[in-house]
Every structure is written in C-alpha cells, then in structure tokens.
Length: 251
Picture (cartoon, rainbow, N blue to C red):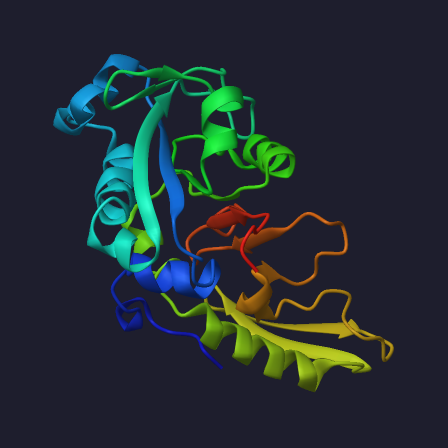
C-alpha cells in the first residue's frame, strides 16, 4: 500500500503534475494564472512580490506563472501565460467581481477576456474559486485548476506525487474489495486502538476513482461534473487540496 512518509515525497514538479493530471497539452495553448489581491494596483509589474505577506500569491507566481511563461510552458505546448489579479471574494466559492487587472495594468473581465480567450486557467487564491470557475468552464469550454491556500506542504506532498501510481494502487485495492461481504479496519488514533466493522452485503463500490489521463478525468463522472479532486494529507477537513475543472478541447 502506498503510504509514504512526508520525507518520501519527491520534490514538486509542475511538469509531472500537468502530465499526470491534465495529460499532455495539444500545443498552441494559452494559459493564465489568477490570484486575489486586495490592492489590484500591486499586480502591475508584479509589485506584490515585494510584500511581506501574500505567500499564496507569491507561490502562484514562482511555481506556476514563471515556469508556464518560460521554457517549461514551451515544452508542454503552452505558447503563453498571463497573470491577472481580482479582488478577494471573502469566502470560498463565492462569485468574484467581473473585473481583473493584468501585470501590464490592463483592465479586463472574466466574461469578455479570460473565459473566451484562454485554454488553461489556474486560480491560485486565498479563497476557493472552484464553483465559479466550474460554471465558467462549462459555458466557455476551457480547462482549469483551483488551488486555494497553496502552501509548501501542499506543494511537496499532495501535488508532488505521481497520481498514475496512486491510481493503479487504488484500482488494485478496489478490485480486492469489490463485492465484499464485510470490511474490517483496524486503526490507531491518539494512541487508542480501534476496530471498524462495516457490512457491505456483497455490493460493488458506488465510486471508482481510477485515474484515466487519456480522457482527462477522474471517475466517476456520473453527475457530469468533470472534476479532479485530490485531498492532501494535512487537509482532512477540506476536499480542496487540488481540484481541477476541465472541459478538454484536444482529445
């Protein structure tokens, strides 16, 4: 069973993340990185990088914007990457204002500029943009990822592993448990040994989480909500360690 110690995780690789989760882009793709800033003027010339805070936004710049606008982006068929900022929503999954500012000082909107013109959209913010970005992706047919609260633990654990390996292991594990009569799980929490017994009455699992990069999705997709959702080890109370919304153009 793949249960690595924190020290066993490989270093974060954006290339590996995109290849295992987005599959290989088809080339000539336009991408953008979205961040939330209280002071939109500070996006101009990336002045926000001089701030003593804004760690999430700084990671968005160094781990996503810079590589995607450089040689890595070119090697993956991404011809350009732009950076935009919008006002924080103040809460998870709230609709953002339809107003953004670019590093050049250009004022744009989600509806007229971001959604119709970009193939890949990365929202790396303090507050989750998953629900609004999903709605935009459905309407405008782009692929996107939301990574709210991005920190070093997320980068070097949940986003650094090879999800092809995890998926193969999960599918093997599922195949042994399929149509089982009873599950018995032993665990230790806070030095207390516990045993969990659950009756399954020989039914197959309702959800199969095997990763299929060729079709760019995680199963199941029965509700037609095409999400990739990875929960990072330290976020036991949050389902949004990494969530990708995608409606692929290149198949």
